[in-house]
Length: 144
Length: 459
Image 1: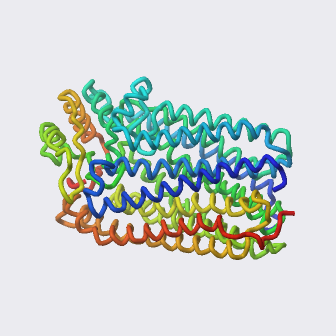
Image 2 (image 1 turned 120 degrees about the horizontal axis):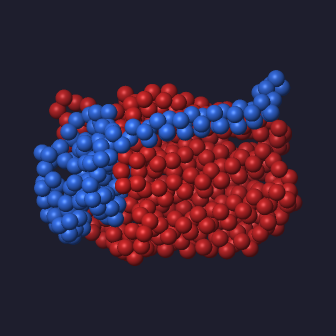
Image 3 (image 1 turned 180 degrees about the vertical axis):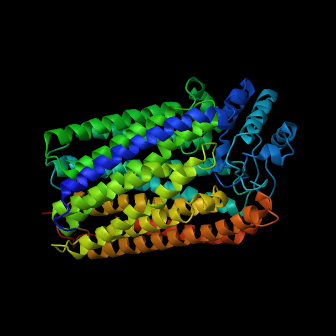
């Protein structure tokens, strides 16, 4: 780089550019925060949904599955599992309950987590709530 | 080595390499589980092994960053470290916390770990990359703050350089943005929104400052090019990193319940994220071409060149191929993401840490550079690991393209598990490449034990 472009100019671009774009990020964050409750149906978060999120976290579900595309890529997407399972929370509960303790030979298996009935209802309600979030039409189809 | 207290970095680097080995061993386990679904089930389920793989990566890179700071800050500041004692104490605290966490993952069911560490008092666990128990997260904050205090005080009493300042800003950002890991709202969408303030603002933000400072330090030392020139480049590169990367965060906000305008902000700004990485390639090769001295540590320069090229490919090119919203609509959360993640982390962060280790370790062991024999062995390790990583990335990319096609793009999309069965050939090839990577790492570790009698003593 020639002498026309000095180190001081480079420094000013760094500090000025960083400050400007961080402030822009804050402005966009402020706007996003104002619309998230509506887009996510915040008012529909019941005690069951809250318990479900805790069950989701306490059992590290994200370690195998994706949820709205984020997580591990070892097991199916669960953001739309409620619709994929025919809009049935019972189907979700039934699947989780019926996992064999020692897995299925030769196959990827989900562990048996021995959830209580309340926890099962919680996780199913949590996944139902997630499926209703406005995700700009993602995933592209029912398979997730 | 000019200051005695720099040698504290050695501890950090040894721990980093040890944990790196653990990371790769667990990588080969999860790679095998992609082929044989029941491998080690239920003893080590996939989620546990993956958590170990990625948490070890994060922890060892942090050891590498801290060690690099302890090495370069005293030398840049031209003074001894403020408190070598504090650096040693915090090393053992951090190592104990890290090892306990990994053992907790491996030997206790995750839900039990959450219970015994009283996660319910301040729930932060069970989110990707932030799986550590809350109390461990608090320990990380304490370690990071003590570390910042230590290097900050060192800088205050000594010479202020651009490199030490950028390193300090990067590491401060690392500590500050980690605080968002304690934000965990009941609303999953809000949780995801703030989660990225840790993950994105780390790896596509402040970590790039740390990487830039470390690379600049190695280049100044090995090429002898005027500091003014290198510092000017450094400012421009990190300016571009943050100008593109801050709003580039939008590429994570396309499909998680956040407003649609992020598709524009994210696509436009993240499409420019390769620019600073490309500049880094130009700069590294330019500085080495214009070198004013022939430094005997050839392999350190190889790592420096390698990190710029591989970071450009992994973070820049492989990031770009799936960052535009209309493309990402189909690729989001597939093996394409995994492919990008592997090469980006290896190129940008693993290789920069190894470059600093390669430059500084011989000096801390009392010689300017290792013997020719030791350097040649380390170069073999460089090529085996790097080529293996290229193949890991290519096989994952092939798997990803096929996955996108079968599961998302065709007229009759297939179910996730059906698609996975069809990808097993690529997962098999990836596992073989992974084993080559492990061999390369073995060669790397061996290079530290090679006879160095013929090496020149440190000046």
